[in-house]
Image (cartoon, rainbow, N blue to C red; front, side, top):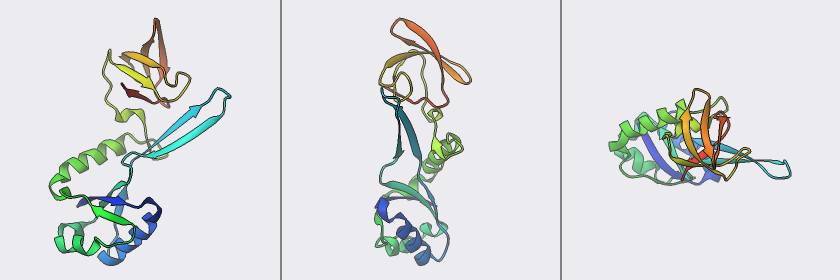
Length: 166
């Protein structure tokens, strides 16, 4: 069963050890991450890595089905609290994790594939040569997108370029 935990990121290693020791079994963690690369005017490359869910993380153990185990684990090092209602949301949690894992690249970071794109809507580039520019999405191809930036129509490879809806 998947649980959603609010954690202290600095103590994740301690939390994992505590959970495994108290449950006497392996636990599995999932934390979707995104990496954004920005190139400044001086051509220097900056890399930013973000946890998509902030201080929250998914944790899997079959022993979470027993309510007394949750109470026992509530005072583990590195754990702030268990999010309420995870027992009733197992299908939604599993769907979300599947969507995220399908959209990951080989390094484990989410790609632009995670976002649902809509034609003729406006988006803003987060990185790349058009960083911070607003564009209109015209057409989606297999490996590239056609967009309109002002009066200019162009294509760009959607492999490593991130953009967000506005």
